[in-house]
Structures are given as C-alpha cells and as structure tokens.
Image (cartoon, rainbow, N blue to C red; front, side, top):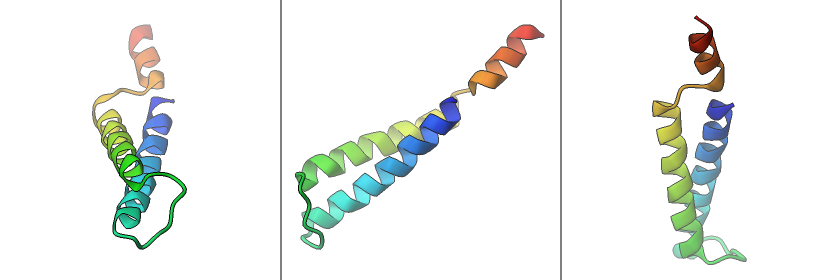
Length: 67
C-alpha cells in the first residue's frame, strides 16, 4: 500500500512540477499560481521518491512479524 501511495505521489509531483515550470515560463496558462504548483510538485516528487527508497511495504512488515 505504501509503495502504491509513493508511486502516485511521485507521478503526481512530476506532473505538477512540469506544469508549474511551464507556467512560470509562460508556455501554459494555468488557473493556479505557477509558483505554488512548482513548489507543491517538488515537495510531492521528493516525498514520493524518498518513500519509494526507504519505506518497507506493509505486506513485508506483516510477513517479518509473523516469522
């Protein structure tokens, strides 16, 4: 479950980061502030990557506790 959440956060963060950067440089007109979208995209991208690297999945934790 944690890996799925991390993957969703990583992909969503990457999309928000790209859209925000394009909005800053004027290539895309957004309804949101492009700076806010860029910052949130960066935060979600970094959080998702770190969760993928360092967290064990809930299935692995349950299997280790039963042994």
